[in-house]
Image (cartoon, rainbow, N blue to C red; front, side, top):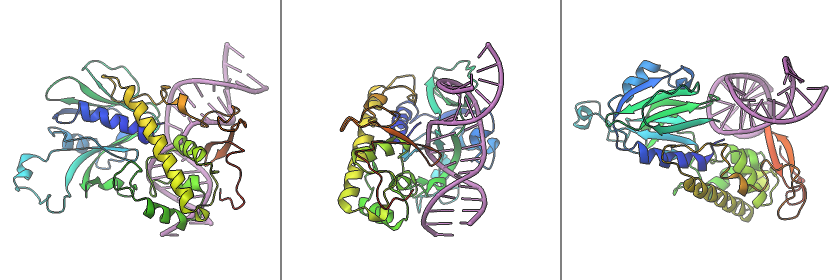
Length: 302
DNA sequence: CGAGTACCCTGTTGGC
DNA sequence: TGCCAACAGGGTACTC
């Protein structure tokens, strides 16, 4: 269940273990992992082999590794690339539900969930991408204004220094929908998933079906203050549970669960008022809320 | 175009 | 014990 904090933890791991290294070999196990790379596995491998990883970047739940351009292009013998900042190659990754990056010594991996393997010219560790439920994926892409072309529709996330609350609030109020649908809409604001949406709504004492057009500036500020707090707390927790071998934290590991107030706590008392937390079907998943702190609004939009 | 839904996928859990 | 339904859910394709 990786949301922004988990993906940020992975990004930091990749920055520490992979940035600055040159890819020696790329191996893809099974076609589904690169289904969004339409040019196919041969092209995927060819465009990454021999490339040096410059950094590890993230927007919302997406990760990417920009690559140093080959020397021939750096010297201007290839197509123009630098004028508008476009044309830089990068590896884009989405963890989906269960994707993991592991930086481990080279060796045999019998895991049926191993989807991709990268080796580097300086030896260990190699980088593996594992994904049990195969909602995750990899593709090679080009940067457009510093962002992979395939994710230009993903909005800035609340951690982004250029995140513009005023613009996001205005866009939210133009929608005719409920506040949780808006929080989960990655084209409005990215990085928030089911868990942190419920946690932020509980903190802001808002029902998930509150109509966005009826929300006032103070309520939206309170909601996004709550979003910031929840994300920052989870990022700090992810940072402390860091393991040198594992680039990724396991989404199932319990480091964040102790601090959750409503998510997964059906029937347990609300820590503010004592009312029993409710689980309700919503958008083909579940929403958790306190029935007293977050009552059903009059003009609900489900 | 905005809003809302179906589907992709597999391992785990719980009811009968 | 064994089988099947429910559940987990982000993103995209699709319909209306």
